Amino acid sequence: MYARKVSLCFKSGSVNQFLEKVEHEVIPMLRQQKGFLDQLILVSDNGKIIYVYSFWENSGDAEQSDCTTLPVLTRLLTGVVDGALRVHTFGGLRGRLSSGFPAD
Image (cartoon, rainbow, N blue to C red):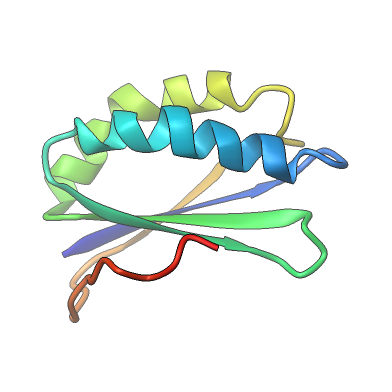
């Protein structure tokens, strides 16, 4: 399993708008990508920083998605994000993904 972490900072008061965009536009787009397994979003207590983890079957699928999805993601999030998206990669992950965690 392979993971990507995208970290970003929000413009003031835009967390809810971001979460709406992710739920209705980004996640459906990721689900269409080959090798996409799941995602996890973590929001800091102060609501200014967010980490979006996406989990992939392998690094090739994640890299292919970066080429097609990252430019679209950047465009979608214009207006809610302050600064550039930062992508971090993690390989050789162990464990299982499990759905059933509450959304809120």
